[in-house]
Length: 262
Image (spheres, one colour):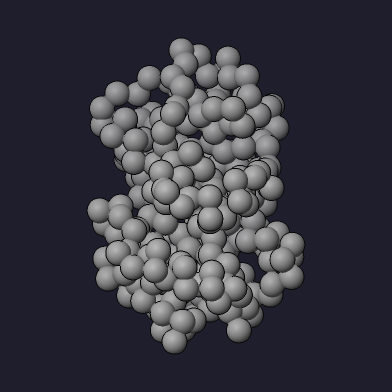
């Protein structure tokens, strides 16, 4: 019996226009009535996720920032901070990689230098209420994620560099076509999901998960009912036990109705 459902956002629950499926709230209420928990799992920040689910945002639980920040009923229940010395080293390393922009997510704010077009357009898709600084070394906050925007494509540009420098100390994930997320070692959606499962006494055999990109793999591996979206690239499809329709075909809610709410 499925007791917990967790879904990625972009490319998964949200369609290509960044909108929820039209039947999402109907499905969500039916899950509530059946005692099935629904959790959002995203590389986005909590502040960027909440407006999408208004006016019922407080009814959901959130795995944010690829597992570094977890909210339950509007309460912070899980947070993994990057050591300050590592943050300083990330800032220094980033200065040596041409064409990238770095964003630092902290407990009290999200910080970056002034970027400009076209970087700001990509930033605004996933982050809000950011603070522009003149010097990243002046950040006075506990940082739990560094997001790197690489419009050249991170797979062959910044990702190998950060991996070579920090793979033994930090978790480094390609989280989208232009983004890399860097967090404390062992931080990922799967580790956050595991913490939730252990807290609630729910097993992977009682868990359903949906994803479309490589930062979802660890989460899919924590669920017997793991679904990769039809719009995912072909290489991703080996990581799911099942296939869901595309995000533009309401694949998440269609699978839930078929597998859970019949």
